Image (tube, rainbow, N blue to C red):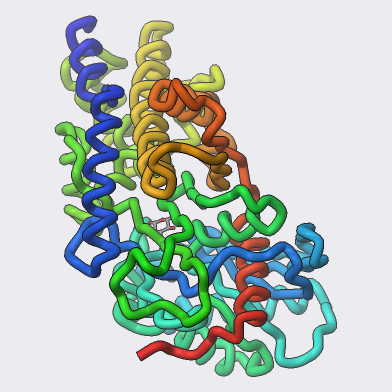
Length: 439
Ligand code: BGC
C-alpha cells in the first residue's frame, strides 16, 4: 500500500522545476501562436480592449459554457458598478450537447423567450445581447466568429467551422425574436477579465477554473502578426485557449483518461486541471487500487466502472471532510479506505492547482518579465470558488515561484464574469463601433 501511494505521489507531483519548465514551454507556444504558426496555444484575438469603467447601459447576456445556460439582464452604472437585474438558468441536456446543432441553437432561443416570460422587462429596440460562448472560437470581429472545435463533452453536429453568432441570430429569428441584436461574442475568460477590470484597472488577466479551463490577457497589438488588429485599439485581449497546451509530462492515468474522451490528444492541460476531469482521474486510480486489492473490495468495482462515477464535486466534498463512499451507497468502506480516497483527491487536485498557478505565472511573466507592477488576476469557476484549499495551493506555488516579489500577483474571485463581463463587452463594443470585419 505504502509503495503504491508513494509512486502515485511521484506520478502526480508537479515540482517547482516542472513549473519553470512549463513557463519556458508556455512562452515558446505563446510566441508561435501570436505569430500565427502551429502551436498548442491558439492565442485568439477577442477584438476588444479593456473597459474604461465609464461604460453604462442595460444589456442582455447569454452564457453557454457547459451544462448550464443562463440568460441575464445586466445594468452598468458608468462608475464601475455592475448589477445583474434578472437571471434565468437552464440545463443543457446531453441530447442537445451531442445532437444536432440547429436543435441546440433552437433550444437556446427558446430559453431566451422563457427568460422574457419570467422577467417582463421593457427595453428599447433593438435590444443588444452579448453571447458568452465558452469554446475555442476564431473571431473575425467582436460580433462574429467560427467555432474551431468543441470541448467539455459537447459535439453538436454542424456547428464546427460555422459562425456561432449567425447560428444564434437565425435561431432567435425562427423564434420571432428578431428585435434582439447579437452585438458581442465573448469567451468566458474575456468576460471574467472585463467584469473585474470594469472596477479595477490593475486587472490584466482572466482565468476560468471550472468545468473547463482557460485564460486571457491584454496584448500589445505590435506583438502579434495576425492581420486582425483594429485601428486605434491600444491593446487586444487574447483568448489563449490554454486548455489545449500539450507540452507537459503526462502519466498513465492521464493517458487512459484522454483515450476515452471525445477529443483524444486535445485539451491535455484541461484534462489535468479542470473540474470535468479531476473526478475521472480519481476514478481511474480507485479502479486500479481495487484491482490490486488495496482499496474497498472487488464487489464495488462495478460502481467505479461507469464514466464520471466520481465527480470533482465528490472530491471537493471529500476534501471538506465528507464521506464519499457513504454518500454513494458503497458498503463496507473502512476508515483506511476513506483516508486513501481523501489522499487520492488531494493528489489530483493539488497537481491541478499547481499547474494552474504555474500557467498564471507564465502569462504574468510574459506581460511583465521583471514583475515591476501589480497584477490582479480575475478567476471564476467552481474549482477556484468552491474546492477547499484550491486557491491556497495556487497561491502557495506562486509564493514559491516569486519569493522576491510576493505581492506582485493577486488572485481574485470574479464571480459571474461571464454574465457581467459579457455586458461590459457589449458596452465597449458599442463604444468602439468596432463591429466591422477585418479582411
Ligand atoms: C474552452 C474555453 C473555455 C474554457 C472554460 C474550454 O474547454 O475551450 O474556450 O474558456 O473551457 O470554460
